[in-house]
Image (cartoon, rainbow, N blue to C red; front, side, top):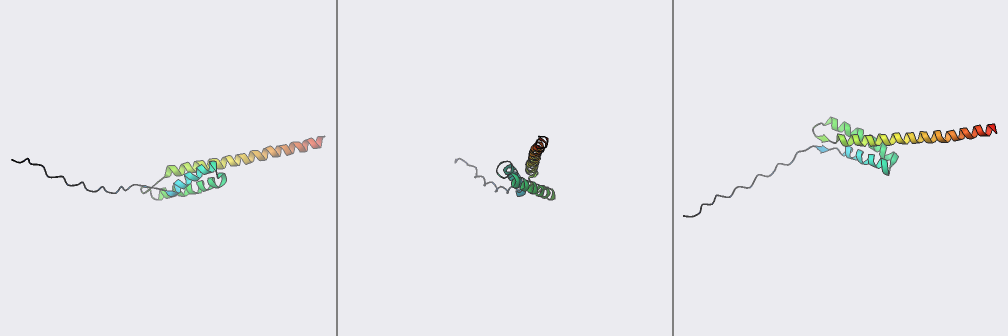
Length: 112
């Protein structure tokens, strides 16, 4: 009596390719340039972050199930807009400071 061995199992079927949502390239660019706006390219980086952030959000809205990256785009927009706001506040502060010095010198020279 021979030992009956079970026949070998067939190999499992190949796995189906994962069909996932693609991350928007514009959203990634927005986030990267938003970070660059705070470090190496203050004006250009912030401007690119804002433009590409809005384009990425529009792309995500046009294809809601196929394209992902709305959070990345929002992060790029926040970084870009906040850097622009700080730049404007800084320029206004410098103008007010130096304008005040000029006015103070004008008053001092008129008095004395």
